[in-house]
Image (cartoon, rainbow over the protein chains, first blue to last red):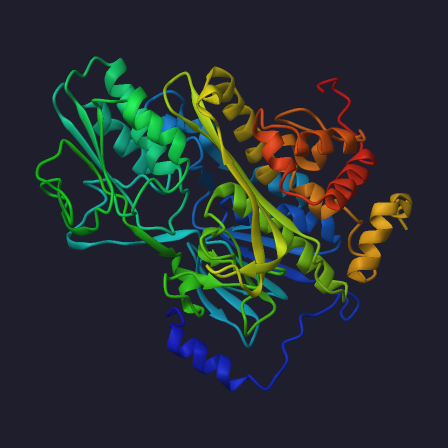
Length: 434
Length: 102
């Protein structure tokens, strides 16, 4: 079955625009309301768990293409061999046994928004899932530059799994005086501190392995370090000085994976030993049948994560765009996805009970980034629902206003933070999957 | 109705927002769920300190207004005082896992 394209979807949306879509409330039917969730990352898993925890008699079905989710969080430590892939592999079994979530392995291929049905392609053929609420948490897709890009030759490792292993093996094969080239995508992209963290742990690995003269060249499409500028600035200029070379404003013009070569607006590298090209990003495929903003993500209502035309279709996590104050965007991260999933779950449970969404809401993100094999920095940010502001400080509407942001001061980038990183991840993993 | 909705802050918040009936959700539950990423679902671990079954309002206010020593001073700055009251009231009613890890 063909995926509904955006033109078809919009036509369909227009055809029923005179109708008010009213999700079924509990009590209107003898069967339990049905919530279908697409994507078993931190957003989708958390949504499924919390709707079951908070919603009472609600059927929840989680759809994912894989039998388990491999976390991007901590995956840079798999690249360096510090931890195993097993440690970041998160199964869905606890969601089934502890919370009664149904899990369907397959790929969501079409949304019938008017008919409240999702079509999923599975190994046993297409299955049609009727829903009262549909939640899409598909994460990101890539927007590669011109040229000859093949991620099986030059891994992005920005979706964890086989890509992570490929990059790990390529890094392990590096010798002295060889070059590791990586890109930082143009914002907005998944995990703002992630690329800088990767540069640090790769540089640290090369130093620890005695790869004298080996370099990490960071080609950043942005005007400067987009997250933790103090911590990563210090790491690049002091901790890993002489190994990391950092180039801002490096717009990627073309990539040739076969020769591991890249052309950017400020620097060209031919025949790198490792080319870790992380392309620019947009919403995952199934979400792109919905109306998108100029950067390829789905605008949502911050109280419910619903899309404009359909209050019972929700998008959470990396794929959505939350209204925020200018210059203070809601980041795309596993932690924020978990945070948004709870807002969305609560809104769905309230809608099913015939109630309005809660407006007294807050979202947050916090994370730890390894700088070496013994130290880590951290980043923390918080948002509260209310007025949001344009660049001149004038109210431009309602959304999630950033009320706080901060990073570890240099004296806090230490071994305690490195240990805390594992407590943080353990808790995140359990809150989302157990 | 949840007994803790009788607290002044909760009443003030309810009046301020003219909140809908709360049959689907206890006050503070959604806000407190934001703590779970680091302190476990319902604050009962695993992760950092268990926060279930304790009244942490004074600790949260202290962290919010003192100089930043770590990540919690930042996170406490992410909520209004009234929201911290709701969070603390909710968590104080949630059972911990009684494993002594506090």
